[in-house]
Length: 217
Image (tube, rainbow, N blue to C red; front, side, top):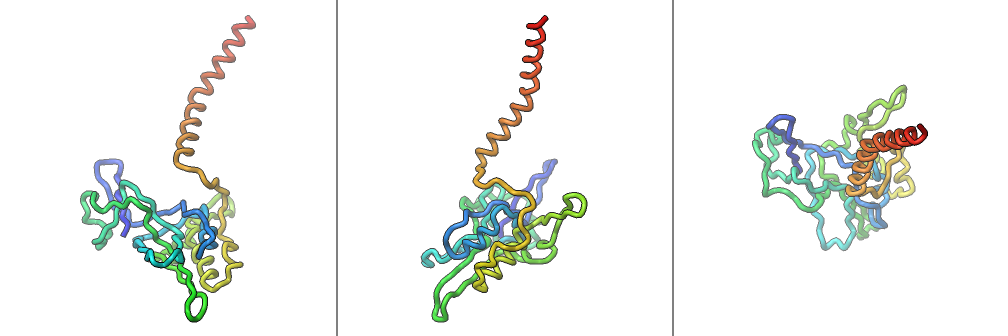
């Protein structure tokens, strides 16, 4: 299972057994692509994520719907008993360099016609405690904490039933629209730009005003 080492404010650390996935693969014209489109920008919460291995001989009939991205503090733990309570230091040999699939859609044509399968390598992702967990936006407005869990359940059932026209039409959409295609480099650039603007902007404006007043006196 995918574990993550989480340092605390002191010198200690703890093991995290869950992952919150906010970024999913780009939608494509392939089996399960409709479900993948419905998850765009929606947080998917998975606990005790079990990696899914894809058979390369399936000729592209399997599509990764959601995956856990590599991180220097994440690794694949073979002995997950006790949820990592006895782990005193982070293993260095079990890190993964490629994204680990945790939700996969498969489609093929068999003797009985079109066959579809969806596999989620995480226990309890569809429990109501996670699907319906919500927070307040003020007043009577609520926002789902894990909208991807509900969307995956609703759209997944519709896709498995062959009702593609009902996929991505659920009511668990985003409360706030998000920008798509924003890379880590772009976010870093905007963060530095805003920091410089907020730090130097008032100083520059004050200098201009001071210079203008001095010029008029």
